[in-house]
Length: 361
Image 1 (cartoon, rainbow, N blue to C red):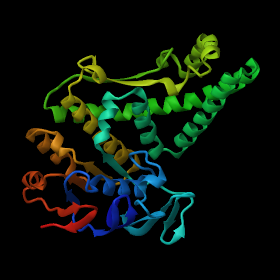
Image 2 (cartoon, helix red, strand yellow):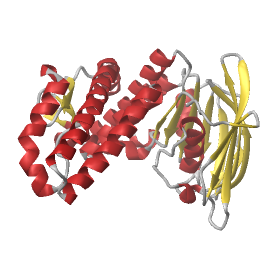
Image 3 (cartoon, rainbow, N blue to C red):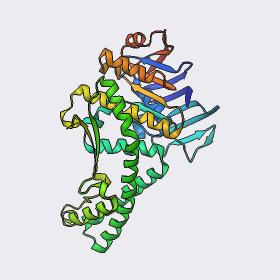
Image 4 (cartoon, rainbow, N blue to C red):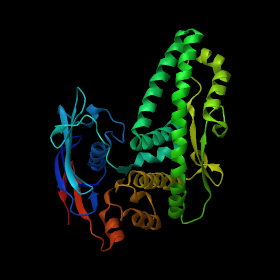
């Protein structure tokens, strides 16, 4: 996939933007709070149908306006098409492909690194579950369906617990939750089987050292290696009384955890800020490789102001990793660091100030 042109109207602080991308690498330079992240967010939404910030629709519309409009000309597998979306303060988004309403949208292969990704390493378990679920949902519509169904069942069962429902009804919802939960856990495990070797490889390359890195999928209350369905049933029996007291479901994949171990120490608690940054970047590099291997398509990569977080050696390593991707959009506060890294490598250079983007030299 390759983005040839984009048009943004009333998108956060970007009143009107129209850009073409002749080169594979676009560098957007500007001070903080000028709109660099907003620009990448718009591209991400066009491709993946959601904001990387988990923003509400009204938050993505320029202040004082009633809508925002995004448009991209996309080249994919030898053909071109136009994708558009109108985001409104009230009502659902309206998607179109080549001018016709798009009801069954196909996500476009794009992966983005944003500063908040460090929370994937140092934040609560929910962050890592969300990372897994979003990555798998992008690749598998059936997984997204299972996950949505699981969340609906979980909401309903929690409500029944709080209302003191009859055991027979709780049993019915418990069985349905287990059936759906098995699919969720097994899909997560299959994804990690592909994902982890890439992650280990990229982390070691960015570190410049052969540091032992392990990833553990920890199921609460049972060992998934002994059977997911059996484990969920066993845990349900253990927590029955506690669930009644607390009024909440205490078994299932919504309580599982992904543990990152560096030299057998949990990174969330013991890793330095530098190690967490490298891990967050490695997570997105690994995700890119998995998308490419499964999708069989070129991937567009978004990198939001990450070079300033790294020392000179790591900047060079990261540049070597991303420059040969199909298409890359970089944002930075310092354009010279990219010029120095790129040498004679061609790229498009743009400057942004107060939401206005202009072609740079």
